[in-house]
Image 1 (spheres, rainbow, N blue to C red):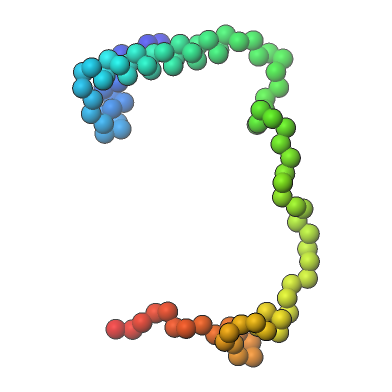
Image 2 (cartoon, helix red, strand yellow; image 1 turned 120 degrees about the horizontal axis):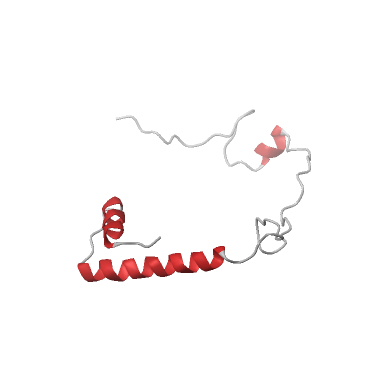
Length: 97
């Protein structure tokens, strides 16, 4: 399957790009080169190769989720610059006109 100038023009139209005739020729050649490499990859025997999600063996760097007790309301409010008995107090952020 070869990429033609019509294919390049169609792709350019879809992407809302414009190219000169010289650029279209170059792009058609580059796209055909990419397709040739894909054909080479298709010829590689992969019958006994297991599918991979990554090429290297990855381990999670995140810790396990372990449930721990949270802060009490008093502890959470202790260092708040403004609070009442139950809630953080914050400056008003919506101004009425």
